Amino acid sequence: MSLNRLSRGGTVCSLDGHSGYWSEHGDTLYGRALIVHNIIPSATVACMRTALWVWMGGLFPETVDVLSGSHYRTMRHGRPIRVFARRVDHDHVQTLGDLNITSPPRTACDIATMANRSPGAAVFADRVADLMHTYRFTPDDCAAILGANPCATTVPHAKAFLNTVRMYYEERHHARVRERQAMMPLRKHYASRDERSEAKQKTQGDNWPEGERGKGEREQCQYLQG
Image (tube, rainbow, N blue to C red; front, side, top):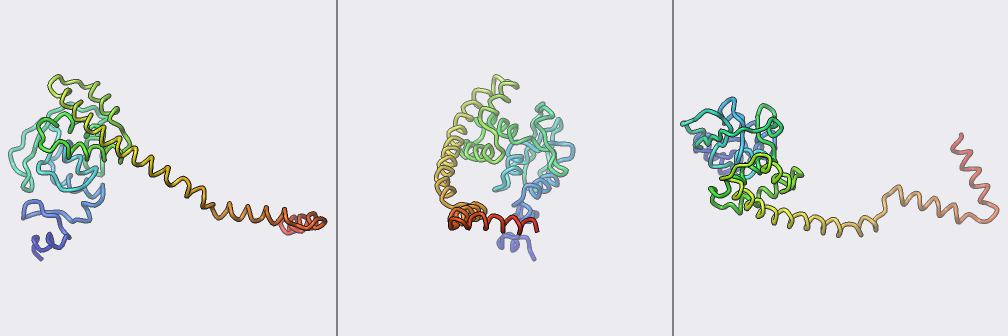
């Protein structure tokens, strides 16, 4: 069956008309890590938009972004290789299967530093906010990383980008708080099965006729001991 037909049917996600990956692999974190590991050059670290795709999924990016000291002129599956020669702390690089990739906080910071060069920065701010909620870090965590690795030419743009991310982040945070608050009365109303059973036994014990209470308790003790 041709790649185009598989792509139209949703079985395969096409990359360049000649290659692609199974859609079901693109739906999982480790599946996406395997896909990127097979695309990026060896001895490199996936970063920027490529790392964001691995962590969050969605449409495959238009470039293959890697950390490396080398230059690559060839295309990979119709995508140019975009190289960033940055020093990254070992704590900011993680391993997913065989793939070396920047951590979610570091990925967010890297995208922030390039925000002034990327069209549709607001779209990436929205996605970075989702990344923060998914992997449980905050704009303040990113600000701390940027503060420890200052760069006079990129920090102002990065801080402006993070301010936009913060708006999306706080919107999601407040929405989740309201959702949890709305669920609290339901949790209080619907007692668990154990709580209902315990309440029923207590009520039955309290309603024994006077003079029968001790008898019932003795029978219960004999049953438990026997």
